[in-house]
View 1: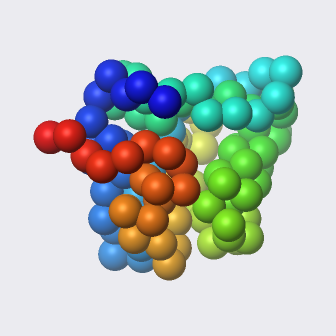
View 2 (view 1 turned 135 degrees about the vertical axis):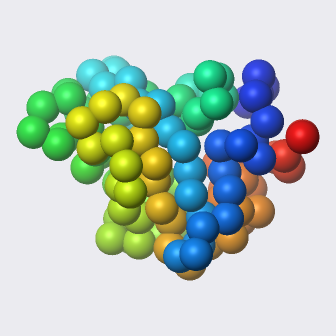
Length: 107
């Protein structure tokens, strides 16, 4: 993954663990990480943006990548928009960067 913005802005410490800024692209053929851009981690999810299905799919996908249960993640902001703030309980920013293949912050 080649970032065009520092992962330090996207992944940061939070009192509960780590905060992650995500831009969701719903309705993809399959769920996948789509790189960094615009100050957020882009994530494609296979679920449509209807009745919270894309939000649920996002949390399940990220939890799988992080080796956590979906209930260890929560949406702190952005429930109805594409830009979201996901709080990951019990993981440090370094652990989240490593699990998502983001590397170390560059700024």
